[in-house]
Image (cartoon, rainbow, N blue to C red; front, side):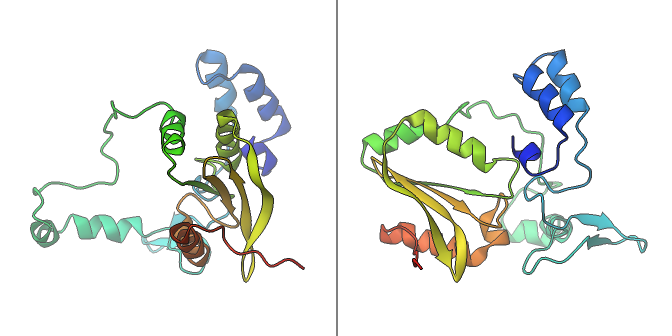
Length: 212
């Protein structure tokens, strides 16, 4: 749904994926093989990406204040520096962000854990950046719907100088927030909105909204 509603996927591919995909089987694989999003950042489909420039160096494809899509490269070099690994008291090894480690203890869904927290009167806030295709906002909303909780505070905007997203609260202390203009790592793209959201959570109150 996310790729199609954001104009990244064609009607034909979307119809094919919708018809054939339960994320298993050859028909589903074939449907996905026809999908070509191009060089975009799945964690924020509107963010600049890191490209290999004519000088052999990596450069951002565009400018987004406070965000560097090429930051992985100096980070990897830094964490592979023997002096840095020694300072961390780490085992000397080649470090990379992804070691192809297969998780064996990760649950298929977090819904039972969320239910447990709610049943024990612990506040739960779930948020999604609306530019994130990896954990897309619609998927978060579908998951919350599966909990079957009644709404206590209807859907409304929240603000950080302007509309920063939308919030809705449910019985048992569950709160859902969207963060406008944010990708997967909300503080990377919208640091002020992330801080307001965290501060509101710690204060036990919904983020601000000024009605016209």
